[in-house]
Length: 129
Image (cartoon, rainbow, N blue to C red):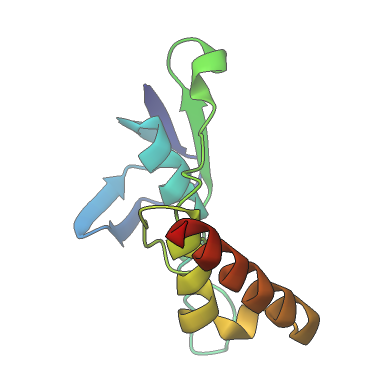
């Protein structure tokens, strides 16, 4: 599904997104795939400041996404095997749990970490049967 990505600012908006330079003229729009548009809207660039430390309005990201087609088709379904911290897609839930445990332990509080260890052991035992 496609979507219009509107720049509601009175200044042109430019951003490098997934290796491509995206440029949207002021008070205009471009078309993108809906899921890409949602990702683009969610990225953050630092606000540029002038010599006095005041934010420059031309650096504001004033993006609005308008789905083209039936809005019911615009629901973005999350991949259940995708790590929300780094975006890596794994083969299954067990690999995802192990990845989070190994690569993002700071995301787990001590109680959750103990539970995750127990769950990983149970999952590993179940897999071997």
